[in-house]
Image 1 (cartoon, rainbow, N blue to C red):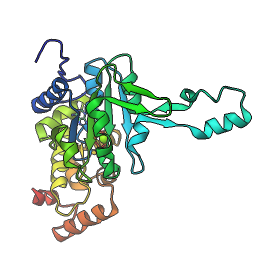
Image 2 (spheres, rainbow, N blue to C red):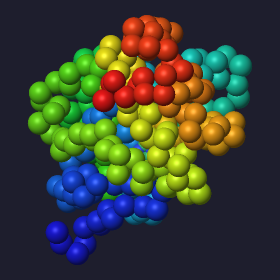
Image 3 (tube, rainbow, N blue to C red):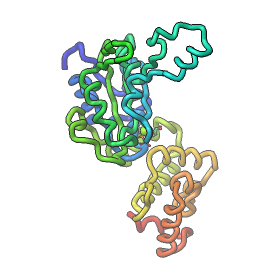
Image 4 (tube, helix red, strand yellow):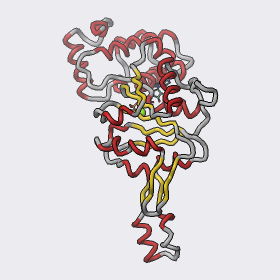
Length: 288
Ligand SMILES: Nc1ncnc2c1ncn2[C@@H]1O[C@H](COP(=O)(O)OP(=O)(O)OP(=O)(O)O)[C@@H](O)[C@H]1O
Ligand SMILES: [Mg+2]
């Protein structure tokens, strides 16, 4: 990698694997968007924050919703305001530029310094959305017919795109991205992640909570498996609640912090009843 290309080495609050760090650096060097997939809570959004922090760049976040259109990321022409001003205002409505509001892509292109642009949860939008952005992401440029202006990136932003894989993304879009799948953290990685958030946890509490958490993730038919963020919250609840570590696996305290769906709580209870009561200390062990 040439010395002029910025390299991402991780940041203090974010645990990153060597493979993920390499993918980030390849995407930066090749100037291609980095598409990150992975289960909810595996640190996809946080990666963009970590890159921005490590490279000392501003982060521009474009949160995608089911109704988001690609055009909104470029610019919006506020015709309603212009009409309003023409009737009630005293300004110059002939100056159309005043009514052109740049979207997140436009903002990233015109930023004075290189920025990190996060297009978060791209799979929430309709299928056309990724394809509609191909040209702009390739060229880092777009044309505004209303003002006859071309907006071109001063410096190509580092583009991070996340997806929970709710929908498959189009091939033409995938071809243009570097892809990385963040696997669910193994227990060792999870311990490192937890130590960032809860540096002073009692060893026994951590051990029991981790074991219970991974057993719960193994319970068959759970629709929404608890993820990293839920484990972090659960640990907090266990500490605040003053729970005795020896009772964690038996009592499953604050279960609602881990399982968020009624159906999943029912599934777990049914399975536990089928295999003994929740008071049985070894009951979750059957889901190993
Ligand atoms: N590698 C990590 N290092 C440190 N904290 C992490 C890491 N991965 C996840 N976390 C913790 O988990 C939380 C969830 O992470 P994040 O929001 O980035 O996940 P996500 O993959 O974007 O989830 P979603 O798909 O639900 O948006 C973070 O706020 C952070 O507390
Ligand atoms: Mg996210």
